[in-house]
Image (cartoon, rainbow, N blue to C red; front, top):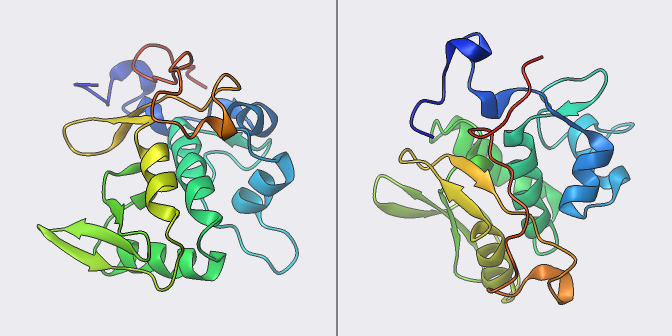
Length: 184
């Protein structure tokens, strides 16, 4: 997406606009609705992990879809406290806004790393060996713009075996705010 800010969207990046309901996002990404809701809105003493484009009614942006997609790949291998710590570090210390929508995360199968100024920084602690394959499969479902920010998401489809984690899982569906995005 060459020009992400347009007068058509009141000077806002269409990828940040609220466009998707909680229910449809959960279905698109194949994440339990209750899990997605908790990540975005929190529950009781559990604070949200991700920000949400609009609180009421809960409405997600394309960026929220990407964040949930990447978080879903990480959460099975890292506990949420580790993920929160890594995200806080990347946002606060490395000054990277919305790190889950950027092409910065890498893994060696044990730790999460961020590519920062040409150096790999370890931003997590213990993980599992399967992490490399799972995170890689999720990141291959994203296309990034020249600044390394997600611009297209190809969600896993039921056509892919074992949750669509195969490299050649079909790319039948695409979310691309550059093609269509509702202005609210």
